[in-house]
Structures are given as C-alpha cells and as structure tokens.
Image 1 (tube, rainbow, N blue to C red):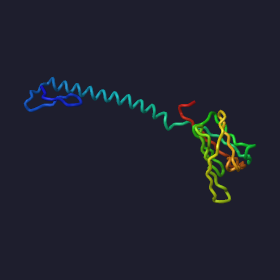
Image 2 (image 1 turned 180 degrees about the vertical axis):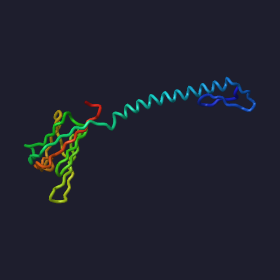
Image 3 (image 1 turned 30 degrees about the vertical axis):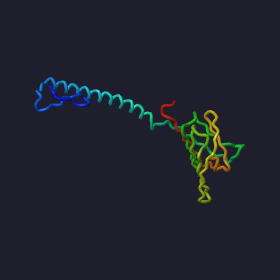
Image 4 (image 1 turned 90 degrees about the horizontal axis):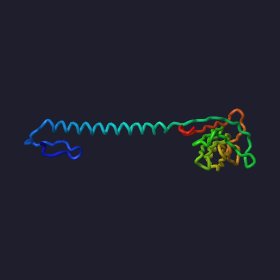
Amino acid sequence: MPTSFTENYNLSQWAKSDQVKMEDFNTDNAKIDAAIKAEADTRTVGTAALAAEVAKRGNCRIECHSYVGTGEYGPSAPTVLTFSKPPLLFIVKGPNSLAFGSKLSNYILISYTIATSAHHTLLQTDVTWSGNQVSFLGSSTLAQLNENNPYVPYLVFAFYPADEA
C-alpha cells in the first residue's frame, strides 16, 4: 500500500518501506488513462466548436457594381447607392476619390485628391439610410463622389457577413 497520493489525480506515491502491489499500479494507470481520455474528449469538443466559429469569421460575401458620375452635387442631386441590403462595409473607388461606409454608421469617410494640385482632403459626410439605399450630399462633385467622367466609373464594393443570405 502506498504511503501517500498525488494532489491532482490521487496517484500512488511510494516510500522505500512500502510494499508494492500490482493492483496499485493498475489503479494508477486506469486513473491516468481516464484523465487523458477526458482531456482528449474536451479538446475534441472545444476544437470543433472553435473551428465552427472560425469558419464564420474572416469570410464574407462581396457584391460589386459601378456607376458613372453625373457631375451634379448638392441638395437637389444627392448621390444614392443601392445595395441588395445594407452592407456591413462598403467602399467606393472613384477617379480621384475613395470612400468607406457601413450600415452601422450615419456617416462615410471620403478621401479625394484634386487632380490639378497635390491637395488631398479627408472628410466625414453624413449619410441617410432608407432600406437598402444610402444617400449623401457634398460641397463638390469630388466630395459627393459624383464626378462626371464616363471613362472612369465609380466602383462600389459591398461586404456582408458570410452567414447572412
């Protein structure tokens, strides 16, 4: 019979004077086997759950479309973008501009460069969502993403979570 036992798994701890018996070793081996199996089972379940969650992350559904600017801006001619549904993120790339927006926000960030100078502008523009459409105004065709350039259309990229239809 062992003199003492380990704290975590209650395995035999022997002293020189203890009489060693095969049953004690078999009992210890059964405890070790059960603990390893329980850990492996827990890890398998945890790994499967983690893999399922990771599969949902980093993936997205992307929609792309384009439009040609009309050269109009201001309250009588808002820029209106239509999506299949409000996107988690959208990016608009124009001839001299780049904009980022989201269904989670009531504004977009627009960056543009005036072609005749090295002047670069970054501005925050309020948007209005109506269903799957977002509209906004600007103080110029650049600021409103509506330059009239039939040769370089605006490209619109909309990003949706992969688990949303």
